[in-house]
Length: 307
Image: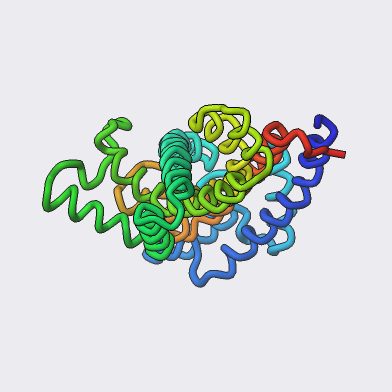
């Protein structure tokens, strides 16, 4: 398994290089520039700003310079947040995004697995149809629609929870954004768990366990559920990606000080280094998450061999 992990890390290098290249050039293809909002400045000052950030160099030279800085772990200075580097901004926003993401993925795993297992154990019943119908609705409605509705209903009209803000990560402030992030993943995980659980429950080893007189609860939790979770574990990589990309919009809707806020503001302001740095950081997180998922998959299923 160690050899497999090292090979995955080695293979991640060209993937990161592709991410850096695409992010670097695509953000510069967008109309406008980082100093367009300062047209009132004299041309000499704008020229000096461009020279200070090496924007007066040819694009290939800028790319090589940026790659050399990335190798040293330097994402460069932010063009718009003048007193901060990109690394400092990521360090400010990442704890907020991480807290939201962990809470959302845990919520999705717990409720998705529970609802999917319940639907499988009550196959073709009203419970099954209700859970699967609700899951389809959760998949169909995107998070950027659910989030404003949750804020409007529970934050504005009912006043049960704050409609926005962070307040140092208070639980009340986290409920709505975490719910908006978790709902689509709960729906997908519930459907995956149901399908896998139904297949496992009709397996020979489950029938053997029942024939030996084992209690139904023990059969379900000790024998059926671990096997049913295999597709869910495989989905965790895309689930993390969905939560990461969804958090960019959710943080903006609820006014949370996470990386998503810096990313959107950087995109609007053409802050090249900030946008590229956040994309690289997110890409590294997703590659790491997929590697962890693969290793956990092998731990759950001894039949998997990393050769």
